[in-house]
Image (cartoon, rainbow, N blue to C red):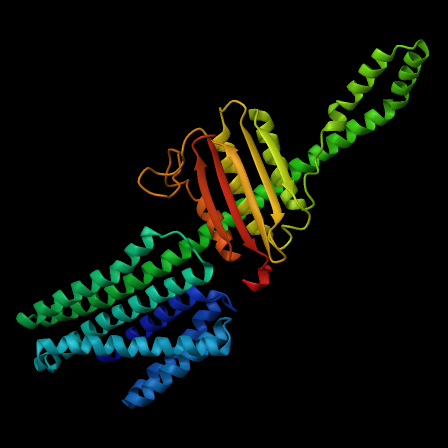
Length: 439
């Protein structure tokens, strides 16, 4: 009875490990409840197959059930699902083989009848911890390669250390159990503790993944709100400009009559001054349209307003059609972070300026260059990495990482450098024209 419950718990934990691995890598076809139902059915088949006590049957069922779960529940191609299924099966075999080799150190008595259940539990926990660690580290590495994430998360490192620490604790328990004869109640408690130790590791991985997903959703929501705010600001300015130009058009007849009166009097100096005043009017000088991309136009307009408020010159040259291949998400992340960093750098600097150019580099690439005034070198003293100057280091410093993410997503290259002679910061980005569906 106890051994059957132990096997049931092991299969449940194996299902959770597979679920965590797939969630790290593949988009799901179904809600979580649907995934749980598929896993329950699949691993119930594995549990039922274990009663035949046939190693090759269990291995074949493990391979087929995992393949079915990956292919049915998620969205990989068949060959991709087959590859990951092979890797999962091999990882399972290797983890059990490695732990079996370690347990031979404790002698044949380790598998004796007296403590068979307790030792079976400890063996299962350690092998599943190793299995979980292999799949977790591999899925994180593959995900980083696919999404080209450039930053390293300390929380991810700590999460991967926990299974190693748990395996060490389990080995200590084995050493104690083999040297000391324990009463039955302590054997049961040790077995339960070992299973809970494995469950805690899986729960922490699940919680970490869920937190990352929520953070990503929050970031996307912030970008969406920023986009809507910029759009509203842009159309408000467009409305104001339209109103001013309508007023100017309404009064143009009066201005022409005044110029005609001055012309009859032969007062050329006043005529020249009058015309110059009309030409220099903000109603004619002020332009809301900066480029042909509507979303980029709203971002540039917001930055232009911020620069105007701080006394910074803002110059742009955005060639037509250069940014059409960028998704709205990437366009917002790239240019908002570039311009926000530049505006922060130019604050409180007399005669500061920002110059942004987007031009075609070839038929397949574009080049983005930006030069902005900068009071001091933003690079850290002992490295070539940019460091945030804001007080709260935990909440800031991600803008440059977001820029690098977009550059790598579009198979580009980047260079940042500080000109100490002119006190200017230079940004050069090269992006490949890749449609969002190709990434």
